[in-house]
Length: 152
Image (cartoon, rainbow, N blue to C red; front, top):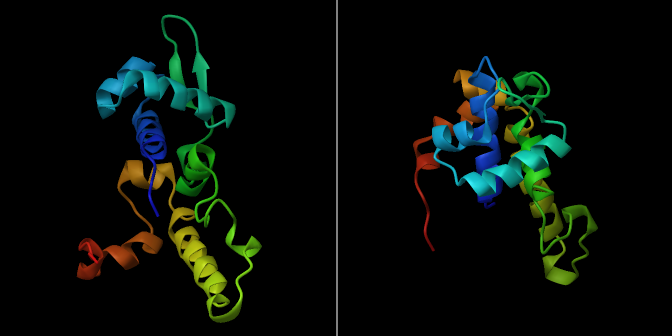
């Protein structure tokens, strides 16, 4: 699974908003997270349409979370920013139809999606912002092999 820059930036902006007691401007968010300002502006618009952030105009304006940070899962943000988490050639795994020896492959893709959900549906913006990751994450990160990249 590749996490698109759009999703990574959206999560980072939400983390900054979760830690801020006051609304933050797009410029402040871009500077704090070292993000491209124009791209972040489009991302914030997407987050607003998804009702994850709200914006206020005026001197004390800016962006803030539209709901508590512990109500925003990383899975939700990824879906808003990039669609389904585990698509295969643009299709949902349950929609695939393999024949012959490849038939069990559909179950593999469904298992991949389920394992992504195991982590991403249980991690909230608040968990990350507070540094209190749930067991759904730590059960994997304590394995030293998880920290290495396997190459072909």
